[in-house]
Length: 189
Image (cartoon, rainbow, N blue to C red; front, side, top):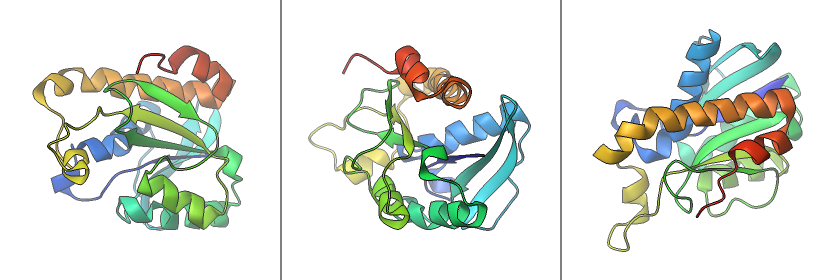
């Protein structure tokens, strides 16, 4: 069984913020695969179903970003899911908007949601799909940038970015992370 987690912050005020790209991808993946995110335990909205004929749990932690590890560790402990079977989708402000990077282990890169997951799992060998949200201008506070909505130009291509991340997730599940890296890993920076 795979656990696919999209990171974000709960609440309408954050729904379309850059930090919530993980939630947006999970919502799209759930709709596409007929998985209802109605569960409300494990400090998450979650649902279970099939993606490419494989059993998967989709989850959106409702702990706020910096405490995402609480939700992820609760699900993994209950279902006995190995870290290598976890895929986390999250925003990355070090990558240009719309680019995807896939990472299979290592540090958090300063992302507090990922840091929380690593700390509580005591393991860093889960797969991450990093979705580029672009860099803030030097005049904007980083927190303010990630919590702000996508600009008008970004909104026009946001659906394509979400679809690309969703396709990447499905390829990781069916063909593994290396195949997904070869197809989706963004070369430009």
